[in-house]
Image (cartoon, rainbow, N blue to C red; front, side):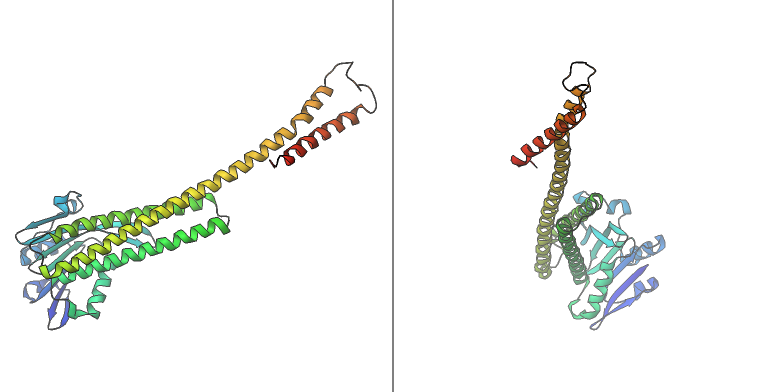
Length: 314
């Protein structure tokens, strides 16, 4: 699918018929969402640009993430998609040519839909493809910030669960691990955008009057990176606290078994002595011998228990 946005007066309009691409004046943004080979080739021929292959878009080398060619800025960045089914990253390719923005992506994205909504609310701020690109990046950073705030709330909820509720250990560990993974992916995508935007900021083809806006976006990304570091520290602290509680529980269990074992050692010794098959053991053959051995076993257990309580070991 290809969506074409152009400006007519003060209004941003949309065209979905790709055959009208060569006829539309004041073109500002062409969004290619999972396009067919024919649609991709049509855009390249009509607009005199060249899209990278899907393999080139996902390359991590700096030369693949950002480069300039024939007064055209090419940039690739990873966006994070979070929904009820889980989370994943997806690459987005940007091409800025003659103040017209071209975006290439696979699948749907809430970030692009939100960008279009913002554009409809304030079309006066959109003068060209550069403004669309800045608006798209701002929307993505706002989404990342919202995700980080959600993660922070989840961390606080887990912390309360550890102190007020008895959750299963597996459930808590899975929740902590999942939050660590999402935070790590947010940090990776933020660093990726930071690297790409730093390259764009140095570009001679990017308008000078928009670079200050770009610097503000970079500052926002730096704030997100600091926030992710804070969340990482909270998650690490929470994990250490959880492991400490587990160790404490295990120590209590081991302590109980140790005390029980030591309490029953003297009675076991006495029972073993009186159970020997010797004729000259005191009280052997006496009617009160059984009660004497039983009294000794109970007394020895009580003495050991009293000693532990006096030492405050239990």
